[in-house]
Length: 123
Figure 1: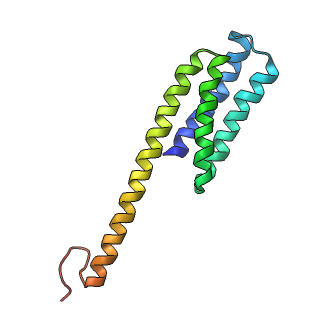
Figure 2 (figure 1 turned 90 degrees about the vertical axis):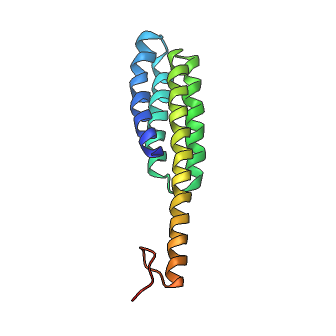
């Protein structure tokens, strides 16, 4: 779920570049470096979420996206929205992983007792 959030965020960050340049009169170089740089970072982090360190980078991306609000004020809102989605996906994903581990542990314990998946003893 976090990878999906980062992918959608990458699209929005890429689309923020023309807004920074044409609407907010940000010079091209910082707009391209910040907007496209964060977009590329989102995609790279989305692909590396198998490692725990990538989640810390994802948290930093959320802060940087909110920080773009100093250049484009609407990005305060957009950044907060994506941060809420990111943290929702982060904590929900963690809860799902904990539940899966518990179910696997319970299934292994049941198998050791000789029960099958339905909870009945073998014939």
